[in-house]
Picture (tube, one colour):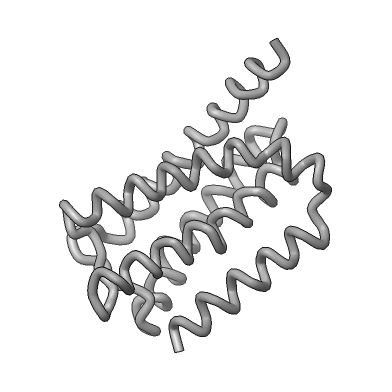
Length: 151
């Protein structure tokens, strides 16, 4: 059931991006989205050492689960958030605050209940702080990246 949800979720989110996000904006926000995805991949690798979360079924399923989240919802939602909020930091910060709170608390509990993953040495507060910090770092990355491109 969880695998069907992961695959369906990624297909639907990518279809929405392909159909509705202008190609110019996709190209504009692709670097920051790849930067964010890279940071999440590093977290996934560090998870093998620190055991912050696990996935039923072992390492193979853990890798599949992490990649499905990173290149499904996190990737596509990051594109949309930058599209709608970039240049308006307070709106960006507030929207990420709300989304990260929703992810860390009710959605994380739901995902654990349906078997996506189980938090071990990381709790919902730590998950929220980590993702919200990444959101702020991503915004700074986009500013610096645009300065370099425009220079």
